[in-house]
Length: 144
Image 1 (cartoon, one colour):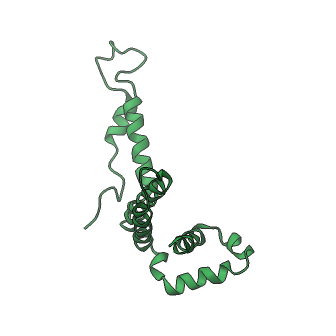
Image 2 (cartoon, helix red, strand yellow):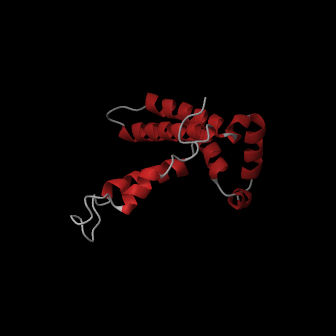
Image 3 (cartoon, one colour):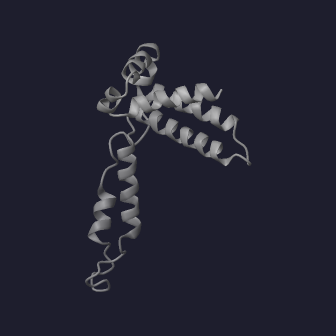
């Protein structure tokens, strides 16, 4: 079982490594080519997400309270699976990260203008208004 997990992890590393790194290690380029020929689903986001989900379930099967490392690795793979599947539906992590930053900025923005909060008649700050006025980013909802 450990051997298959190591091979799967090597496959993951091959897909995420820079091409020049792959070419430096003898045999790794051929291994990556073989993976792309035999497991074409790994070249797409949804397929890779399902693969990471499968790996996550394997790691979680071997986890326990006394083996928290396996549990953390399994949960990490499940998190990656969700991200890659979302990317397959054109919901990119960059858009999610931008949305989270906008929400944080909205929460941190002062309620009133700093120059004269009472004289402004209770107007919301320009920063908050701009954040509230922005339309949702493209791909922010799952498409059917």
